[in-house]
Amino acid sequence: HLKLEHMLIDSLMISNVNGGGEGWPHVDAIPDSEICSFASNVDTEKYPVPSVIHYCQRYIVSDWFFGKRKVPREFFTCDAPLYDEPPMDLAEKYDYKVMPNGEKEVFQNSKSPKHNAFIICLMTHAMNEAGTFFKKNHCDGGNKEKKYKLF
Image (tube, rainbow, N blue to C red; front, side, top):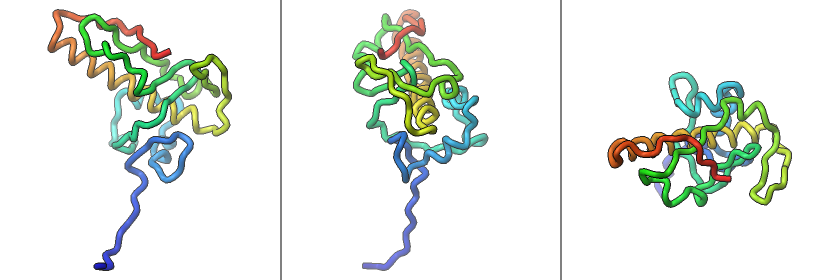
């Protein structure tokens, strides 16, 4: 063993909205009123945020949902619509989530709406950018209507 000193860095990744040892304190520094607008146009000069989402959860605020297993196979086609974009006040407006079975659950952790909203807004925007790029480069026009919701 070389007895090299090391340092644990736990601010580069986010995943579990209720977990510790992740970069959520950086997201918490963003005002609630800016969480979706910032997530849709990340500027690390304004707020440094983690650069990795370990995307192994599903994220829900009210009836806004994003889950990797629910992305439709036909999303990257010319005819498929883009995702409906969540409201910019998603993190402020709701303190609950609607589960896929229709049950409403109030968040127990006051940071959960903000954490979920950050990833929902970030991923929705990223998917729409990717879908728009695909349609621009592979379709004759393509469906750019923003109306698809995961549930």
